[in-house]
Image 1 (tube, rainbow, N blue to C red):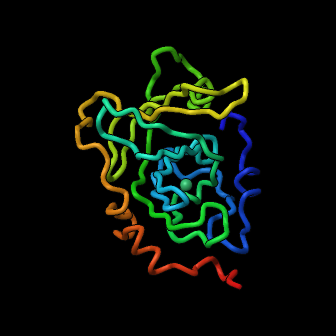
Image 2 (cartoon, rainbow, N blue to C red):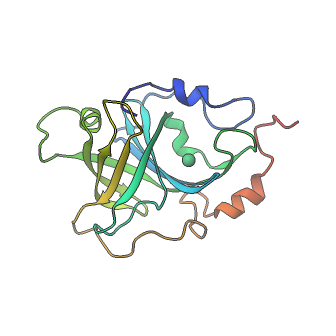
Length: 208
Ligand code: MN
């Protein structure tokens, strides 16, 4: 994810006549950078954690989802940059398409970069490129400091792997993460199952 590929990889994986996912035109979401956490019932159920950085959503697939417990080290595998409009995407990606399955927006909000221990100056994007960044989330469900740290890959090729960990602060807690199957959309209150029932076949009119 550090190759700053813009959205070419994202676009190359998708057929926009067959999915309602956005192609991406926005360059900024507002005054504060945004974050979104989606739950995606694809070939494996996972959370997608995305942070707005330099006009795109930097993205990680987090199998277990973000935890409120600083003891939990959550594996976060980088995925391709997504367009900013993706933070609003909730629906069903059609069968046969990349990432087929239901998506809900589990949490959303803004974030601000936190000063790193080693980092002085430099942008948040540069901190991520260097393999470590911490940030304060203000979402509906997630609050407080989190850190993303690369522990494998980067530079010399090989698949990167990161950890997403809650920092120890007043918003930490032992509750962990809710069950992804029971979790509800912060935008519509719907579960994955409900979205699948209501929107299956809704691949953007590209049905055969
Ligand atoms: Mn996903």
